Length: 636
Image (tube, rainbow, N blue to C red):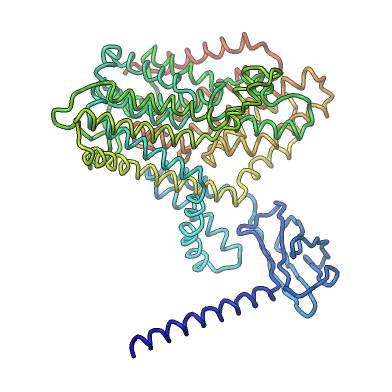
């Protein structure tokens, strides 16, 4: 009887679900609906669709009005489609047969798009707590979005609160690139934990120790490693920071200084080197700008020509070397160097960080147990880049130069696959070396590996919140608000590189993404700069160097903004790899970054636009950097 009753109940529920599904399908098919973007911002052109009932409705029988004005539509895939820019509160009316629907649209003022990143940044500096700051920044944006959708304050707050999790966090995690960064970071954490436990890290420290006899040589080795691992900024920060941390701790170099050395030899090197994970993205962004302009030159040629104007990345590398050579610091870095504890992360005291793992009892200190896995990651990444981007036809093409072929392979390569393969390979090799030498059992090795995974949780949480905020700034068109100001002023074409540098830095600072900034700015600023040069009747041989300068300014400004932003992923990873308090890293790095940025702008970018020779500008810039360090720096 019970069996019969259960069967009947299941049959009834199944039939009822089918009925509901069919009814819902029928209702949705017969529904006339206006599909608006989740966040609708003023002065931004949107593509809007109107879902039509399944009934055969001719285009002429359906009419769309906005504020009483008839809107011309196209029928695309069974939906009405039109584009419109909302500048104020409007009403959309759709008339179809006997159905008439109305919808009020209240666009968000574009200037409000700057609120979320600014709030997050200011809160981070004032509260000294990055998690809450990022969360409140996102919440301010989601609240504004729902408030302008017509909800009350109470409902907009809670809808905005819940959308942080069910929309922005989830969409950030749906991004395979983001998941790749998280996985790569965890694998690096696992490698560090294993090579620490098996004594390899201690052995490597002992091997490098004779060369790192004091603070100067220790920082110099860190600087050199940062330049040598040039192919990827993520790999650079995680490998250099984790490898050098025991050495710099022993030499009484603060975690803040290690984080600065790591961060300042990551993006600046990766941005201008010929064989990096950046090159493919850079070339594709530049190509979009070239296509819009319509000039006959390759993106790689433009990139190479722009390198001579890359003042900020080049001067940053030189600035770091001069700081090391003179052994001087200024700004908040002085306090960090004098009090080595203030920049250490709080989790160290709780014993949850991989740097607190001690070598297993009686573990031999063999340096190659640490070096081999790290080299696997380095050379494995390079090999993975060529493997994923390889094309035999291109390699056999005699009309292409060797560097053009290299750039093509890197442009076609799957960066994150290469990083994941190499880091997984490095971790497996670390486990095999450990177990084969009977330093640890397989179970113990896995337990240490999981401990390394756990050590990355705090950084992963910050990354997820930073990505969610970046997605919100895309929805609210923060970049368009900033770049829109550039178009509203009549400016000299010779000032375009300087303004481009400033605007790129501001956007990168606000969004925390140098790549996102380049993706937005290159297609916009290159045609604008070229059109401005043509409008002022500049000769081709004058306009082209200006264009190269603008291309370089986008890249340099993006890196500067990325260095100063507390919501930048590379800045976060630098703090993570160095086990440095993130906000301390941001505060101590910013004065140095702004110093180099100011010199790059005033002595480099602006005069070079007016055709002052580079062989004069670079020595003068370096001399000014030296003067600042000697004048304001203090021995620590």
